Length: 185
Image (cartoon, rainbow, N blue to C red; front, side, top):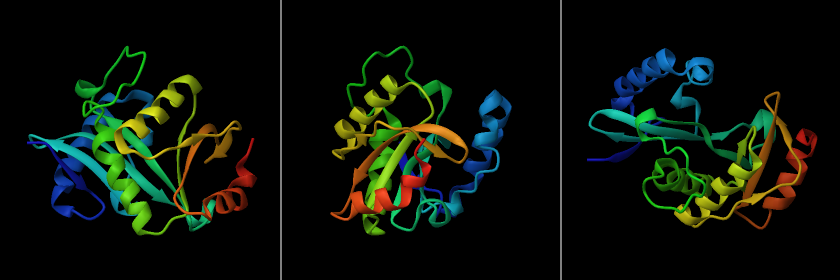
């Protein structure tokens, strides 16, 4: 039976977490550094899809006051999907629960962001703006939350990225412009 857990709060699943990190570090090649030092407790919400004592997918909601202020969150950060559950070769995201992150993880992160009274949340991707645009559409299909792709790239943690933002409050745009202007490329 599939379940969704929050590894930042549900410590009884840490053994599964460490098994996943061990697996990732052995198989992920260059990307293993993105995951090897992750600590779920450092995130506001770290959702994971679990089935048969295996983590199939995870991603997190990150709030980083030192980087972009207290009212902005980054969701779907550090997303990972087990290779057996990745969908490849698709030209269009059509929605549905086969998309583990947008169906199971993101709705919990979005609700957590709202409960924290964040003004806005964003998702980002380093490359493939067309694929990212399709992903943003998939988020709306599977969560009902609309993200708007921005035309400029942002330098986040030393990497230029495409960004899509969802305003959660009427103050969202003001807060975004005030806090994120310095990151525009």
